[in-house]
Length: 110
Image (cartoon, rainbow, N blue to C red; front, side):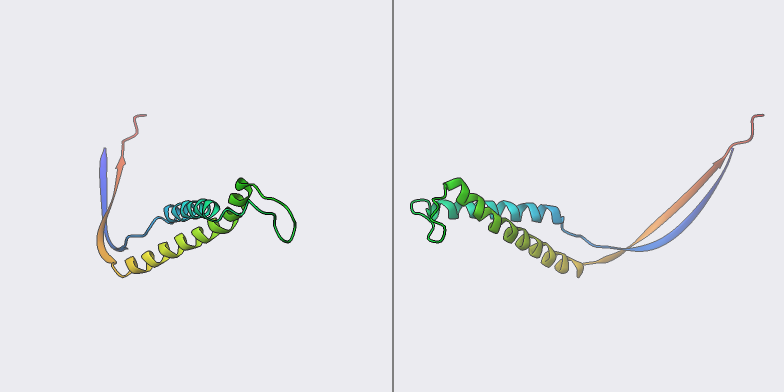
């Protein structure tokens, strides 16, 4: 059995980055919460719609508000993540990486 080792030292840039999915989920949750607050703060279910003369239920109003509030929350969450990413990009530092490759060869047992 023989071993050969090769060392190779490199440098790499390391920086932190926010997890975008968490910010998108938080923005969507905030949009749902805002839609829920708006649904019960401005109760528009007591009178008919002026243009269509239809009476909407509370769940329909909530659904309509979710169609507007969730994309706004997603956009705001993404914008916050981008701002944090830009701010964290200034705090980069370089590290040294020692890469070692070891090859082991065994004699033939034939």
